[in-house]
Amino acid sequence: MSSRARRTAFSLVVFFSACGLAGMFISQKVGAQSSTDESSFRDSLKNFTSVYQIVSENYAEPLTGDKPDTAIYDGAIPEMLHVLDPHSNFYDPKAYAKMREDQHGRYYGVGMVIQPQNNKIVVVYPYEGTPSFKAGLRPGDVIVSVEGKSTDGMDSAAVADMLKGPKGTHVHLTVSREGAAAPMTFDLVRDEIPHPSVDLKYEIKPGILYLHITQFQETTGREFSDAIDQAGDLKGLVLDLRGNPGGLLTEAVSVCDKLLARGQVIVSQRGRAYPEQIYRATHGNGGRDFPIVVLTNHGTASAAEIVSGALQDHDRAVIAGEITFGKGLVQTVYQLSDNTGLALTTYHYYTPSGRLIQRNYNGVSLYDYYYNHDQSQNAKDREVKLTDSGRTVYGGGGITPDDKIDTPKSNHIQDVLDAHNVFFNFTKHYLANRTVTKDFQVDDAVLGEFKQFLTAQNISYTDQELNSVMDWLKTNIKSDVFTTQFGQLQGLRVRANWDPMIAQALTYMPQAEALEQSAEKAAVAKQTARNNNPASE
Image 1: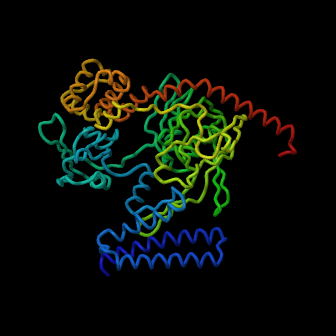
Image 2: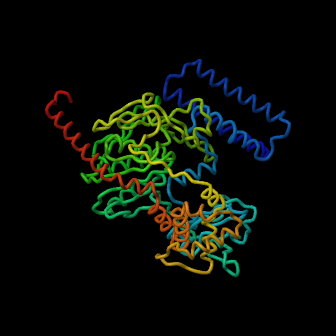
Image 3: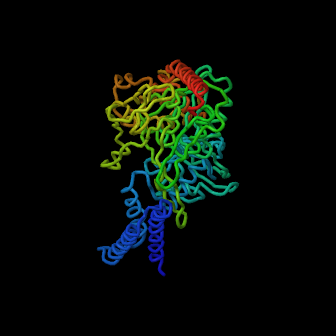
């Protein structure tokens, strides 16, 4: 059999595995598929093979190279799934491996983020404590070669694959750095690279912990629990879930378990193939209460919405920010042939009060579904539920915040500077022949150099434009300088200290404390009622 025939056969095997799994899922687990439906299903598969055969034999150009795989992987399977819903998905071997890596929260390599820039592969930043960080690689370094092989013409994924490898093995890099007289060489020893989901945690005000979760992976529950336990006597928590796309349900449950009382419902999931599953706090917070403000935006989705909804329904936190994405479809991931995977929607998420998280996607293009977040909807058209203390909350798509905080909108000069990656490139220039200490401030001298850099890069600006966004400007300069000089976490902390949404969230701490007390009173009242009316149990 030729290599092309083998590829085509394998692609068809994967396609029919996906179809067969969906059919088995319907017929065996639901038990509601009639013989007529099964016959129709078989006829549909027969029609597909007929179409594929006609295409392969008669298309104007021969299906050579990767075209057969592309037709199946990027065409037939994704389109079949997208007809069902926006979140059922197929993973080819590379995408499936990446998904599993993200879920594990670790891999073996040298530990840095890279990206293409001006046809070169550039280090964005090394993760702190990793081989690349310890060796002294810096943001802005251009990776010229790996193991003597030039990176010219390579994309960042290909270079990343070269940097990964078994623990304890060596990899040699050559990089060019602005200000260095000659290329620099590094001999790095690969190691396990943890990729924590809690990327920033610190005491943002006395007794107030700020904590940002990037996604929910296998380590999130433990990371969150450790952060809370290490914080000591907490007087408040700002839990930042902005931009968190979700992840593993079990880890969202684990986070809620640390904050809710034992026995409280966290989330339920319902689907026609399986019995309803209800997740409760099995350990509970042990009576350790403190006010919580959760920050959300349109990018807060799925497992992050489970956390937001559970804390809101139990009056455990004030939700502040923007309405969340509205992803309440649960995917079960099935491994198919040759390390491909099928993520098939099998459940819906519901908050403790019974709210459906998923927003409507019927008649909406995939682009609008993912990128148009104008989710305004009349309250009268949305399902109404009540929190533990009787507050009104709304279902029908996403978690509506208790207090709205809009994400700051950028203006023209901000868009221009971001489009030119100005702060990243200026930092390379500024630190080419100098170092800074942690008392570094963006003073008039630094601003003078920054303006000279803009002029040298042919970036037009006016002093009035820069003055109108001066706090933002200084924060971005300082953040990138700190990232290069001291590490990514110090740069993130600079941004968090300035972030106007975080500053606003901190003002809601008294409101969160009052909400917590109200929930406690409601719980006592319900328990008293149960004690007085045992027959109603």
